[in-house]
Length: 300
Ligand code: NAD
Image (cartoon, rainbow, N blue to C red):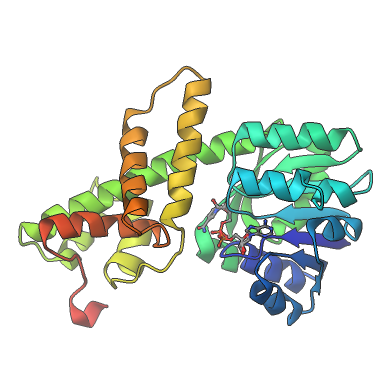
């Protein structure tokens, strides 16, 4: 089966690689030609536009940064729908909004193309290990048709409802993750400033009620090493929190903690930290406190 893959970034590259390993024929597109060349070296074909990807694929997967880019890539003049034949399926795996997914599905329907929204969780490590959690919205029969492909990318695959439902669940997850990482940063800086060894704090918090996925993934791999290369970028969590705040407005809700977290990440962006891993939010507190939360040399 011929699969198209658009967006060969932090997540897309290992996902596309896993599909090649699983034996699928891949045709890929990205504005970054270096990323495309890496996939070509593994046996993928390359295309000059999303339209050309669609002309040559039965199923097209996308992993792109923002709703605006997703809309341009799918609905634009050289986009996926300009090239897709009836019967093609678009599996949109970026984190966008339920509304964006529904807009794509509506436009696609007019030409017999079906859409699943299938955002993922598990980060770059999960993408590399093919252990992503994949949260899917769309028609059940389309989901079942695409399931073998999704199983080459992830371990836990959920069908949660109609188009857009996958994005709604994913944004809820991002709300929790964004708040949790900001909280980890604040807490660890306070402890360090109060004279507690960061490794000791990590060990005790890991066995206490303050433990979290945010602490476990962000302290040892990023904060302790002073390595803030993403991972999952501050630009992306700032985008996701903006999207979930809009989702709350549409549902007549307020998100006081989510709003605070969004402002913190946007502050980091304005200070030039948008390209850092999400854990880089801690550097703002570190500067205010005049301390750095790092492992002792032998544990780095
Ligand atoms: P990324 O920025 O590393 O990758 C995005 C890729 O899209 C890049 O290679 C970029 O060159 C390409 N691109 C940008 N504009 C394009 C266009 N017009 N046409 C074709 N290609 C284009 O982002 P990422 O971290 O891989 O994230 C991708 C999506 O997955 C985002 O929506 C993100 O929120 C979501 N996500 C990321 C993670 C993570 O840990 N990084 C985890 C879960 C979900």
